[in-house]
Image (cartoon, rainbow, N blue to C red):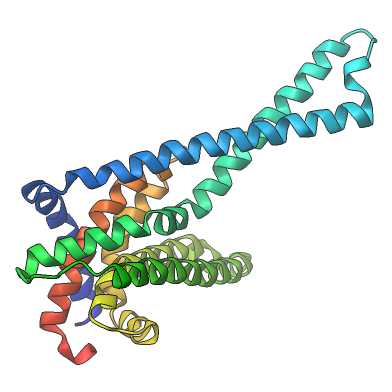
Length: 262
C-alpha cells in the first residue's frame, strides 16, 4: 500500500467511524473522555492554585509584600498576585496543550483497548472472548508506546526547532512537525489492533514506517483538533474515541489488502 492509498484509507475509515459508533451503540464510550476532562481540570487547577499560594507566600517572606505601607502598596501587591495567577494558568494551558494528546493516549488506554477489541469483534463477526491478561497487556503496551512516541516526537521537535533558524527551510518546520504528530497519534491508535494480531513492538514500528500515509490519515483529525486554542485538548479526548474506531477499521482493511507488510 503506497502513501496516498494509505492516507485515503486512514481518512475514509475515520469518517466511517462516526456512522459505525452510531449504528453499533458505542456512544457510551464518550463518557470516558468526559470523566478524564473533569478530573484533569480539577487536578490541574487545584495544583496551580496550590502552587500560586505557595509562590505568593514565598514572595511575602522574601519581599514582605503584605507589610508594604507606601502609597499604592496594596495595588502593587494585588497586581503581583494577579500576574502570578495569570502566568501559572497560562503555563498550565501551554504545557497541557503540548503534551495533552499523550496524556489522553495514556490515561484512556484501558478504554481504547476495550473499544478497539469491541470494534474488531463487530467488524469481523468473530467471537473474541474477553481475556483479562491480554487486556492488561494491551493497556501496558499502549502506555509504553505512547511514552516512546512522545520521546521521539520531542527529539524531532528539538531538531526542527534548530532547523527553523535556517532561512526558507525553517518555514516548513511547523508543517513537518504537525505531520509527525499526526503520524505518531495514528500509530498509537492502530497499535491496539496490531497487538491482537500478535505483532511485537518492532514489527508494529516497521509496518507503520512503511505505511506512513495510513497512520497520518488516521491521526490527522486528532492532531488538528489539538491545535484549537484553549479547548483543543478537551475536544481531542472525544475525538480520540472516533480515532480508535477509525484506526481499527483501517488496520483491518490494511491487513486484508496488504498481507506483504506483515
